[in-house]
Length: 364
Image (cartoon, rainbow, N blue to C red; front, side):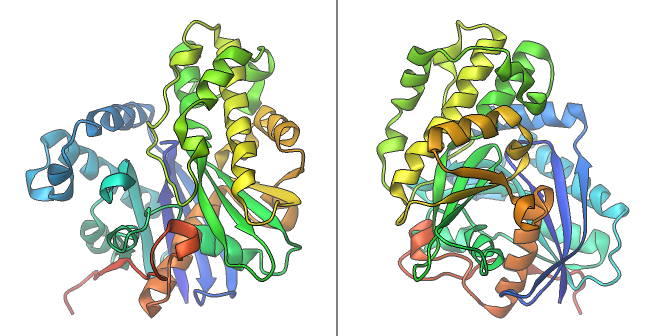
C-alpha cells in the first residue's frame, strides 16, 4: 500500500514528508518526498513550549481536557502546519497518513511521552485516515517509547554487510546496531543538534551551524567536554532514551561562540563513541541519517572519535532527509497489520509491541 509519513523532529525545523509504497516488511519503495519549513516565529514558539512543558505535571500532560491554553494553541499550530505541508503533496494514491506529531516532552522514568498534533483534525482536513500515537503502547508495556525507527532501519539494511550501525542525528541522536543473527539493538546516545542549534541561535542568530563552519573555526575546550561527558546517562546501560532538554550547555557558557560550537560538536561525537561500547557487536561502519549528517565538522569528529568508517546514508542509496518520515509511513503499515513497532532490544519492552491508533477521515 502507499502511505504518507510525516515527521517533525526535535530539531524543530519543519515537517518532513514521504510517500512510501510498502507492506510494512522488506518491501520498501520511496515514491516522493518533501519538506515544509516552519516559519521562524513558530520555531521560536516551539522552543519556548519545550521550556514550558518541563513544568507540566504528569497528570496534566496526560489529560488534554486540562491542558493550559499555550499547549492547546501550540497543538493547533502544529496541526495547521502539517495540513499546509500536505497542500502541495499528491494525496491521490495514498491510503493513509502516518503522523508522528511534535514531541514536546519525554519522561521515560514515568512512562510519559507527549507528542502534540490533532490526528483526528488532520484526518478530516485532508480526507485520509491517519495513524498516530505511535509511542504510547510501547511505554504502557514498560518500554522507553523511543527510538522507534530501529525496525525500519533493520528492514532497509537487510542486504547490507554487518555489523553495521545507523545513527540518526536529529535534536537527540539515536543508534540502531545491526549484526547478523541478532535482533536490532537501539537506544538514544545523547545530544545531536539540540544543544548546538540552541548555542548557535543564541550567539549568531542563525538557526544552526551551516556545514559545521562555526565549529570548524573554534577550538575544543577539553575541560568543558569532560564536564559534559560526566553526565550519568553515558554510563547507563540501554534501554535508554532522552528528552530534548536532558543536557545543559552550562560547561561551555564562558566560551566564545566558535569554541562553544566546537566543544558541543565534539560532545556529540564523544557521546556516540561511548555508545558504541554498548552495541552487541562493534560496528564496522556508521551510516548517518537526519539533518546532522549535513554538518561536515560533526562527520569529521565522529570518524575521529569512533575510529570506524563514517558515511552519509546516501552512500547505500537511502534518502536521508526523508528517512524518519519514511519510517512512520512504514510503522503505520505495520500498525494496520498489528505487527510489532518495537522489540525488547530496541525500547526495553517485555515483549514485541504493536501500537498506533487509527483516526478515520469519516464516520462511515
